[in-house]
Amino acid sequence: MRRIRGALAGLALAAVAGAAQAQDAAKGADVYQERCASCHVLNGIGQGPGLVGVVGRKAASVPGFNYSDAMKASDLTWTPANLDRFVSGPTKMVPGTAMRAIVPDPTERRDLIAYLGSLKH
Image (cartoon, rainbow, N blue to C red; front, side, top):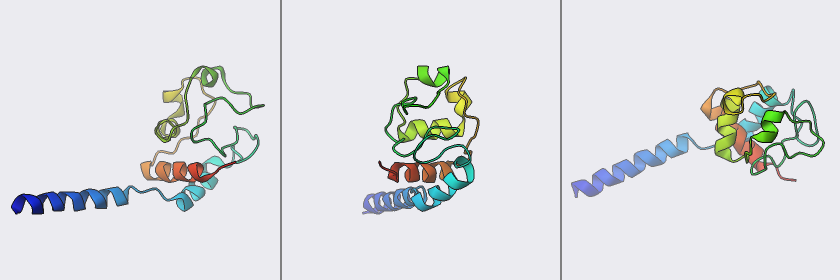
């Protein structure tokens, strides 16, 4: 019986930890406005490529945007994990990228990626 209670307590703690790490797309929209919108438009091309549909897209694939040679050669797909790594340190992940802005807070990154993932063409 103690083992069962211990296992249930462990599951409850894991559920609480998971809930604390849940993404919030609405908060991610705020992060986008604060940290990304000055360079990236959602649809079209700004100083950076448009971000609608970025989750799951191949890097350097928006027609008409002039990507750096480093980004063209990166062979990345923008999975949530790759986006998380990239926005935490773009030049560490893709040396030579033109992007310099970072989102250092992991919760803000998760929320941002949830927001970007909600944007579909």
